[in-house]
Length: 200
Ligand code: ADP
Ligand code: MG
Ligand code: MG
Image 1 (cartoon, rainbow, N blue to C red):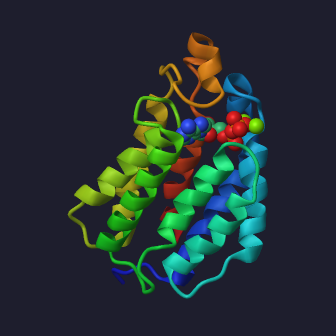
Image 2: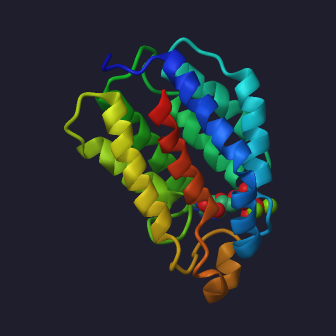
């Protein structure tokens, strides 16, 4: 019960896809205010393809199957999500304990930070990924459900913090102070990703 299985990972990703597809307009509207207005479409079309391609016997294989569809999708976010899920796909080929989750997300988030040259405070998805990853590293629970709930809370706080930031990366950085109050849609989608584990 303390280890996340491949089937549970599929259910998690299906719940994430459902949430994003249902609320894609909210992501698009944020990207319209701070970018070019395609983020909801970019991520929901990738997840629509991903959910028909979901496969794998363990979390790593399932994340890898999602990576491939993101790498083939558009926008700046496509390759970043593709890399994130791809690094998760390099985790152990067995059910994952909390320590496996912590290690895999640390590796994956580090890779996104390097590729995007983004740090906390730059108003990107990294503002939600880093606190979630830190929550997984710091947790004392041995239950993956509880660990992911803690990650979800941290990701939500991180996403909320992007409202008020001046962007240093991505299209929002062209707008400077004019997009300062807009929540970063990439960070919001990461909060939804961790929230989606709740119902698994
Ligand atoms: P595009 O600007 O190509 O239309 P998308 O709309 O697909 O990009 O994705 C926008 C999201 O990508 C932003 O909300 C932000 O979270 C994320 N993002 C943009 N640039 C970077 C970067 N350099 N590093 C990390 N994340 C980034
Ligand atoms: Mg965009
Ligand atoms: Mg675009």
